[in-house]
Amino acid sequence: MSSEQTPAQAAAQTSVPETADTVPTAGERPRRLVYAAALAALEGIALVVAGGWILALGLAGSADDRQQAVTGGITLLVLALLPLLAARGLWLVRRWSRGPAVITQILALPVAYNLLQADSIAIGAGIALAVVSVTALVLLVNPATTRALGITGPGRAE
Image (cartoon, rainbow, N blue to C red; front, side, top):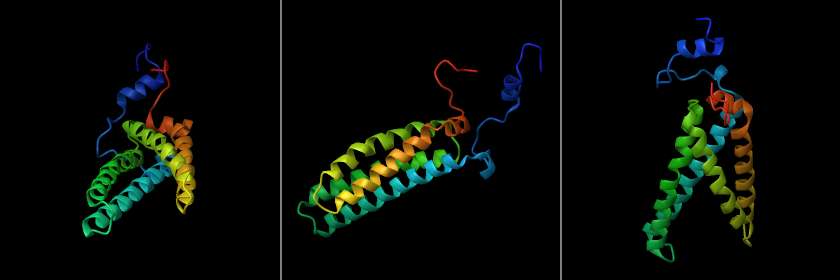
């Protein structure tokens, strides 16, 4: 370490670059990050289940409009990729994963609002989705999460 380097800079130079082989242990992963990854995975799995159900109804001919059901099912299956990839990235403590996770939560809030406007069992789904989305957003912007992901605020470059 030269006299011009800070300990943080010296540690950054000797740290191992992020690769697929450097998966953090459970002790290095904050609980908030684990919970955020679990919520993103839960949303992704819910989209896969809903998309598969709608697609199956469309292909079986049970839906009112077969083409619309097939298109909707495929759309939900493709949309499921975003939270599932974000969940995997959060679990592996990858910096890039917070963006897709936050986008997923922000997009889920208007969906939850629309479900809350229904006069059916969808109200319960809207409440659940709103709770999951807000909780995940709080976990994703938590200082422990941002520190673990190596995200610094504006003007705080090291």
